[in-house]
Image (cartoon, rainbow, N blue to C red; front, top):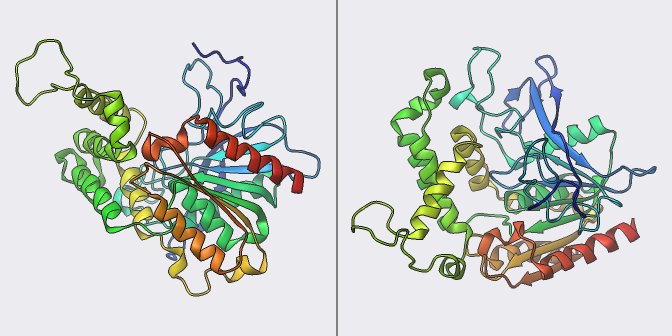
Length: 380
């Protein structure tokens, strides 16, 4: 059993919340819409050094949150990237100061569509404005200003987090030295958009969705959200991973054939869908998946102008069994960066576990990250 004081753990941590924008000084979004107040949940690990040169910002994926490492008081499950962050780990908190924040539109302490709309006194619901990845970056830069950090050693993210790292490097390259983009994409394919479209339809077609005002109605689109999570989870694992873990194993020794849960894999997906309801909100799922659909930074004229003037060093990683964001997605990023003579290191890593590989403690993956971060700190 994992203990809070085991070697490599940052131990017990707490999530902090700060108000970064207010009614009188609102956040201005890319769309021109404004939001205020805006609260942000975040955690930090390690110690900021005297010249403030060892700060690394972690950007989470679609359903992540600020709790990336360590344990909350009384909890037994560590943060979602605990295998990567801590003493002696690739992001060694004896040397790096690591910041992790829940992104705008989320539901784990940062303002999102389930937050109270100050104009109505009820949840925003579908009145919450549509977002772009650049809006996430704006909020996280405001958090850094609050923490007194004006330049990062690195921004690191997987999946949607990798999109944030890429956007940050393109828009504000003078504020970071390195961008680490893992199992990510600069533009979703039609298939990826299709998966998210079906997930959103499952949520919005749920009778309890109530046009996004389910909180005020005292309901929850639990069936739709759990189905969305079940389908998404299928895309996060490779076929080999499903076969290795479940095969065609029955759920029960004896059962009568029907339309219930007959196979172990069905039970697994049902559990994933049900557990998801305890920690995530349906509106955040709608908004954040839509952000990913529209992300296409290289389509903007002059997208690379700033980073050519202030070159950022890139590490781009993919996994050979990731079919949700295949290696071709990473290579597209690499081609754009290399064609602009930017320094890029690319690796395709072997893993049996598909898209979820970026969350796991694979030795080759962690060795690659450790070598890169060590060199980044030496060059700082």
